[in-house]
Image (cartoon, rainbow, N blue to C red):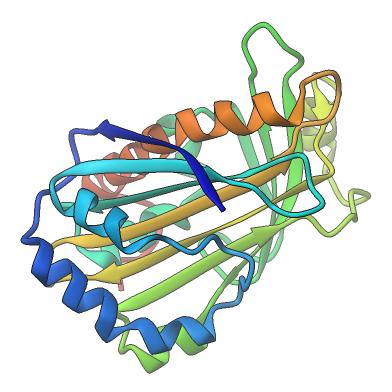
Length: 241
């Protein structure tokens, strides 16, 4: 069940004819069966219409048996899919463009899939948080769509024994998050603009109520989508393909 929907504007949000967006969503609907993350929240059709008007639409979805809610966002950005894809895979540059203070690849290669990444997030007025996630690209979905639909997923797997000395030093400054997962789904609309579906789901631990943390996450969704669009436009360390 979806709840607490918020509509926010962002400078990279791009207005597109609603009929074009809905037609494209319908066109790729069957490909959603190939998604790696079957737990991604389902987006109501009305949200695509709102996004077509140039809004970043965000909200929360309750997950049965869990206090933490999934925070999601949908937007259309004036960035080609290949450039946006390069940006979401550019872990090193995210420190300059997102809220992360530090990121380090622990396993795999930069921009590659799969890879394991340590990330550290400053949290004002609370204890800072860090986590280790495994990131994968959906090669089957990209191949079947000729690159016009792409998915990246990430999740913790419970193995935190691999941080390097540098990551260990950063970890000592904050609190560990042992559960987080999420995904990016990108759909090319017209060669120059991209429909973005993003969600994140995490238990912050400590004394932060899961409900409050979920609401805070939803409030940051628009910033995340816009920051990645900015990185994509400025240029990334990852190849654009």
